[in-house]
Structures are given as C-alpha cells and as structure tokens.
Image (tube, rainbow, N blue to C red; front, side, top):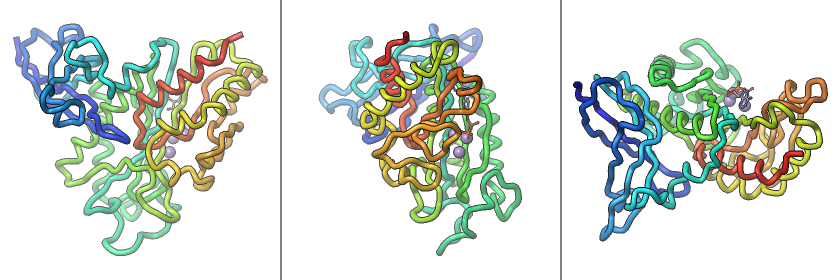
Length: 339
Ligand code: ADP
Ligand code: MN
Ligand code: MN
Ligand code: MN
C-alpha cells in the first residue's frame, strides 16, 4: 500500500470561459490507480459560481487519470462536475455535451503567451521589442530570452510523463508566444489532454513568477493573436469522404457559423479580422492550403480528388474550451447525412 496524492481537476462556472480548479485527496492503493478505482468527490460550488450558498454541494466524477511526476505517488484526475445526485451533469459540464464517437479524432494547436509584470515575457517595461518577424520558431537569447525555453521544455516533459499525446511545440510569431499541439483519437481524449496540459503549464509557471495569458489578442497592433486551431476527422471523412460529402459538410459549417463562433472563445472579433492569417469573424470560407480561410483544407485531403482525411478549423481561439469546440464540431457534422 502507498499513499497516492490525487489531484482532482475540474472546470468552474465562470463565463465566458471556465477556469481550472483543483484540490488533493490522499488515498491508499497497491499500485497506480485505475480510473474505476477512483471515488467520486465533492466541492463547494458556491465558491466557483456553480451553486448557491444554501445548497452548495457539487460532485466530481473522475473521467481520466494521468501520472504527475512532480509529486511522489502523484496523479492528475480530470473530472466532470455533476449535480448532487451524482448522475446528472451540471449545467457547466461542457464535456458531457460531446457526442461519444471513438472514430472522431481531434488535434488542437494551443497558442499562448508567457506573461510577467503584466506584459509578454521579453517585452521592455515601456514600448515594444523589435517588430515580429524573427520570433517564430526562433533560436537565440535576443529572440526567446533565457527562461521561456526552460519552461516549455519542462512542460513538454511533464505532459509526456503524464501520457499526454503531445505532437510538438514551437516558438510563435509574437515575442513571448508559444504553441503546443495535442492529438487524440476519440471525441473527448484530445480535449481532456488540452485541459490537463493547460493545468500543468499554469502550475509550472507559478515557481517562475510567470503567468500564462490565453487571451486571443492580448497586444493590440501588429502582433499576432493566439488561436487554437481544431483539426478534426471522423471515420467517414477518413475512409470515404468524397467531394459531394465535403461540400455538404462545408455548407453545414456555413449555416451554423454563429453557433460555432459562440463557443470558439471570447473576444474572437479582435483576432478574426481577415489579417494575420485569419478570416473575418462574420464570414465562413474554406480553401486548399488557405491560411486566410475559416477552414483550411490540407493538400493531402484533396489529393487524387479523394476529399478524404482531416480538416482544420482555424477559428477557435486560445481561450476557447476544447470540450465546447469538439462538441459543436461533432454536432454540425451530425447534421450532414453520410450518403
Ligand atoms: P499547422 O501549424 O500547419 O496548422 P500543425 O502540425 O501545428 O500544423 O497541426 C496539424 C494538426 O493536425 C496536428 O495537431 C495533428 O494532430 C492534426 N491531425 C493530423 N491528422 C489528423 C486527423 N486525421 N484527424 C484529426 N487531426 C489530425
Ligand atoms: Mn501549428
Ligand atoms: Mn501556430
Ligand atoms: Mn494550424
């Protein structure tokens, strides 16, 4: 028997986007626990905008577990928030709205800024650093400073240790801006891992006196905003596809444009301007290899006129909830009958 430190993680009830919350409970296990060994737990919903003070209990239902190598016998336990009955999803539980589909695959490209003293890491106290240009995928102190790489490398290792399926990391276009990519098979897997990766990054940065800024356009002017491109595919899209199905799918995305934008992260009008590799927020478009379109169609998709593979929705922003994003994409796909 060993005492395991179980960090239960959940999303609170703040709008327009939830915050991560977590607390630890200690339990005895013979070896690293499996999901079905983890008990339900509760918390004070009146402190997280999820309940009134008079009847404040909310329940935590474990849905995924990851090793946490920063703690001896540590585990990160991603949870859904449930009503006091333990079976009804709480209204803030966006994960519960995702259609179950083992054949749905998502790849999220999470961009973010590291922030210190109220400005991006590497920005001078007054004014701006040299204009953007050299920072994307850069090497060198003058481009990335002395601490950012240590943070992103440490974060990468923590995520890999946790079993999170990172596909890569890169320095981004603005100074102090970075990206990681997470891919997962199953409609909820990548979204779970994005939330846990965000948690690990925010927590890691505490000891550096640095915050993670997920807002989609933290700096006005000629500085890139942050997105979270959502790459997606279904079994049908990968195996059958075809031009007619693809065009029907894109028509549905056009029809449901507003519902998509509603869950693609707050303040997206500041980012989706038609500049800086984006389409305007009120237009829907798609195009092969077009980084100025709402949906970019990879060359691989149209190869041999097959229209098969994955698509990239470029509109979700860095602050968006990957649960709500995955949920909406699958709902729109479900409106299109496969021939
Ligand atoms: P770019 O920056 O050019 O848009 P990235 O390499 O950062 O490209 O991201 C591409 C993403 O597409 C990756 O996150 C990858 O996981 C995802 N992806 C690749 N194949 C599929 C697929 N079949 N279904 C869903 N996502 C996919
Ligand atoms: Mn990318
Ligand atoms: Mn990027
Ligand atoms: Mn992309």
